Image (cartoon, rainbow, N blue to C red; front, side, top):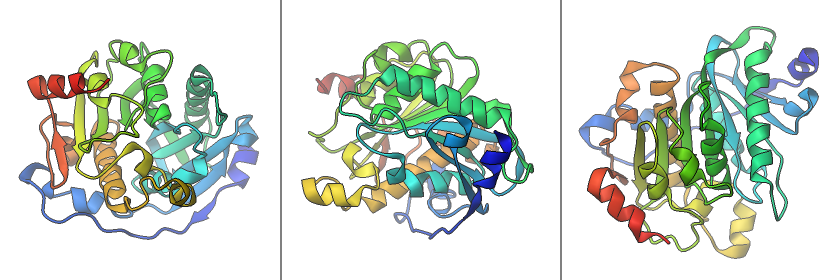
Length: 297
């Protein structure tokens, strides 16, 4: 299995991108940098050689690296997150992304199980040419939309998960909001400041229900349909097509949070602080968070 995985790795090209202008003091120093390509060359692999449909994105080298399993949104293949997952890997984070449960009526429990299996694969084999390893103490769950809910479900009562990122999380069954009460790992929840009628969840309520510590960020112009990279589909339905800026911001917030929590990099600690803000980014806590949670259905 290991040889098959390694043989599929190949260098990945990457295009740098820019971020919003000035930001407030606590995120100003790093947010613009984290929106751009990181210092690592990126390799990609195929999870199917380990018995699971999906992709692997990894830095070209590194020992005891952090790793996350990524869960996709409803009816959104992993190929539509290619740039985002490559971005994470360029900052030293191994990403395993199952490409399963893509049907009209997906089994969320099935996606959760596949994310758990993928993370076990990442932590259990040497990657690249044997020069890339993952630390079993630096594992996280990340997802978008439906996959954001799945990430929370996978982290509930799971001591192996040390960080969770839920990007515009959708309502799923079983309830991620209920499961969040059993999540002790630090969490990042991203929602939209817009009146997002296409959103399928209540991100604020999810953050409010967290058992441990969760930070809740709202983006001025970001929405749930706008985060994935399926441009042609958005052209057809007219949703979220011009959201490259908010997508870059969300990526930077996620990278900073993961480097602070899984990477233990103190210089990014502000990304795990509940009151961190930036231009176009707002953090809600306490009464503000509760009020926002009550606004949703």
